[in-house]
Length: 315
Image (tube, rainbow, N blue to C red):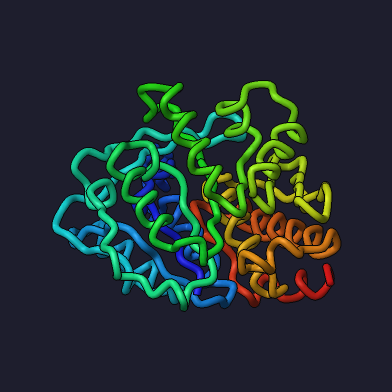
């Protein structure tokens, strides 16, 4: 099984009423929940770890996850309110305003002994859960509890408007990167964390610390990947009519995790032996999955029926 640990929330996305007035439509989201939904829809056994409210919005989240075959047995349900995010589009990027005080997601704590790590291939972590001290500490406790037996996937998915101390945040993200086997970040997040550093030089530094695979996504310009043994690759992504980019990065992450599992490269030792051909196929498949999401409103990852032909074509 693949687990995704972190945020689950409701995005209020811009909409237009039939009479022309602007409106906001509630859509289930949250980066780590999106990753879980994306992997599960492609057909891999997937679970979500995090806090989900029992309120109206939490019920929407649970129904959405379960409707995509995400196992919520590792989630914590509570009466605390659901995190809400209001979205607006600026150019090709989605910007967010979060309402996240005293929420179920923010108050989640790791329960030692609650996860049978022998049955888990990989755990994905990232996004808003890691910004606040409690969420970051609990996620580090989860990673420590694996005792190095599980592949750790990490995407910072930065939200600068929630960061109050950039230096401390960057140090925290570097600490998570040091514990990760697979690191994926967008070019926007790379710039926020590392300024104008060279992609390849930063990737080499991460690989030298023990990470197996580093990926930088660049929207319509494709993705770059570096592997400790297989070297570097660059892949393009399908050019599509973009409806919005909400959930595109999460879908890329989900597609990448699924592809690595399908290739038999999701385990820690197996990932170290990834070939360049396999890396290229996995990244290209992930990009194709993300492209599909960009043609849909909100975070709506594709299912295996949408992607089976693409997987075969890339083989």
